[in-house]
Each structure stands twice: as C-alpha cells, then as structure tokens.
Length: 438
Image 1 (cartoon, rainbow, N blue to C red):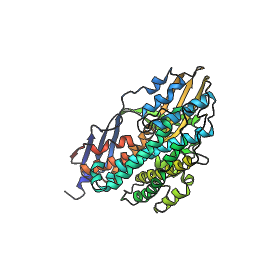
Image 2: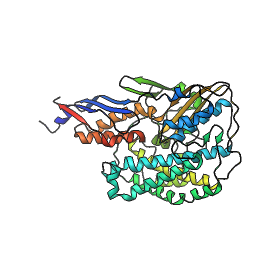
Image 3: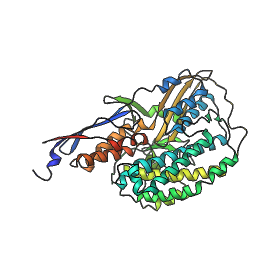
Image 4: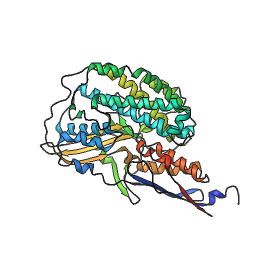
C-alpha cells in the first residue's frame, strides 16, 4: 500500500452526541478518495416555544421573557425586543437611555468574549483538553479571563439588577438609574482591564493559528458613527444595505431533513455573522487605540481566515472596554430613566449585535400592546449553513488522511469559531471512524 493510501479509503465519522450544547447535536461525515461526499451537522433542538409564549402577552412582559432565551446573551434579546416594540408604539427613547443601553451591551460583549477566548478556545491553541488542565500551566490566562468576565457581568448588573436574565430593562428605557457613586466605582476598574485586553490582541494574533482561507459573505450591522452593537443598518460585503424592517425580504429560514435547527440563507447563499464578519465590515469604526493594536499584529484585514475569529473577539473585547469606560466617565443619573409608553396597534422590528452575531426580532401588537405574533432569528441559526460549509472545506483542506483524534479536534475548533454555546460542547466529543478500502 502506498503512502497515499489513506486518501483512497472510505471514511465514515459519527459523533452521536455533542455534549454541553444548547440542544442536542451530532456530526456525521462520509468521505471517499480524500473528498467529503456528505457532511451533516445535526442539531436537535426540542421546541422551546418562546415565540408562542409571547403571543397574548403584554408588552411589559416581553423584555423579561426573552431574557430567558439565552443565559449568555440575555441583553441582546432584551435590546432587540425593546427596539421592535418601541418602533411599533412610535416611541423614541432618550439619548440617556440609548447611551446606557450601549453601556449594558458592552458588559455582555466583555463577559461573552472573555469566556470564549480564555476558557473555550485558548486550550486548543496551547495544547490542552480543557481550561482546567490549562490552568495548571497558564494560571494567568485563566485568571485574566475570569476577571474580565466578572467585570462584564458587573456592567450588566449595574443597569440590569443582576447579570443573568437581568430585570432592569423595560420598553422605553430602564426601571431605575444607578447612582453616580456606583458608576465611578465601576469605572475605576476599567483601566487595568483595557491594558490587559490590549495585550490580549497581540497574544491571540501570535498564536499558531491554522491558515484556513475561505470565501464567504460577511453580514453585520453598520452604524454611521459607532462600532456596531446596539444599532445600525444590516449590510454585507456583497452590496446589501437595508434597515431591520427589510430583513425578511432577503434572509430566508428553512428546515433541512437532518436537523431541527433552522438554516438561514441570504439570497439563497450561506453567510457569516459574528465577530469576524463585524470586524471585516467595520474596521473604520474602531477607536484609534484598538485599530493601532490590530495593526500592530501584522495580520491582514479584512480576513478570510475563519480562525481569525479568535483575534476578532479579542479586538472587540478591547473596543467594548474602551467604550464602557467612555460611557461611564460621562454617566450622570436621571430622574427619567424611561419614557412613558402609550400602547397602540402596530408592527416593529429590532436588530442588534449579540456577541455571536445579528439578533433580529419582529413583533405585531394589538391596540392594548399585547403581542399578536412574534418572530426571533438568533445568530446561531444564521451561521448554521455557513458552519456546515466551513466544516467541509476545513476538513478537506486539513486532510482526511489524519487520524480520528486529529479530525475530531479540527472539527471542534471549526465549530468553536462560531458560537460560545456550541463551543462548550466540543471538548468532549467521541468520534468513531470506520475506514475501508476505496
């Protein structure tokens, strides 16, 4: 048998259960002669009925209800929901409210990116099975990640009352305005965090990241002035430029036979949302310090290397910390932390940037402000088709002659580029590979 014989074998990989993931998932792969003939990322999501739960509910209940959809990104769900309901009611929140919604969103980006970079992704590139094993040799990295995550959680708690499923958000603004003393105490903790995050950008760029150049469509929000987070138009690098209202005219969700998770396509094609897409489309919206840190890495941007998602998260972590510091320095309490709501029948749309990508909400309400219909499209489902496409290209480029463990690890790393919830699962995959002669 020649040295190239492994390329000629039939390969069948089955990962029957993805542990520690929101819902159930599995990966199936069949290959022949070094080419993948079939690849299925099977996500089994039991019905959660959140959209149906909302029907008939008062507008007052929506923010607290949607916060329960995700324990990692509750702020994103609340912010997209209140945007949509405020549009339906013809309500414009004050500048104080908009600034502090962005501040609260900074907290979510900080805690989510810190978790993903340090505890979910970094063990891959430092050669460890998990963060616990990595902590024995790199305690400073784990400590930095946990410290940044706590800071992000405290920013969420500042306005939300608590960091998980916060309760401070309401249509029209916030239930209360925190004190100036609390704002100053929180702001005092940001300087060291900004320095740490700046160093993290260079650290992640200096890792031995795989070279995995691909062609894909980037989709993200774009704001006139800010790096997109709380607001913006939906744009792509293929010329799309629309308000949230027109999302359904271009993006279509559909079922596939092998998965209960919805797949989303833009004009019939897979697309990428999340940190890498945001950075690729909004390099000119970075602050000077963040852009200098990114330029100092020597990496070329926009990037087509999916593994640069790790660097993009570090960049956004630095950007969010600086933005939070700026907003806290300008913070002043107010006696009117929310605008009065006058319900009316209407329709509204909201789109914000969750850490994992665009989160879109659409509501119709009656004249009492009760929800008639609700539709929510999370970033995970939007990335689903792109994730499968990425797995196919990445594993073929990596080489199907590699042994089972190597193929498993590369597949895990690809999945971790997309979504912290899925990322949690893949350190503990069990892979079975059946190989026969081609």
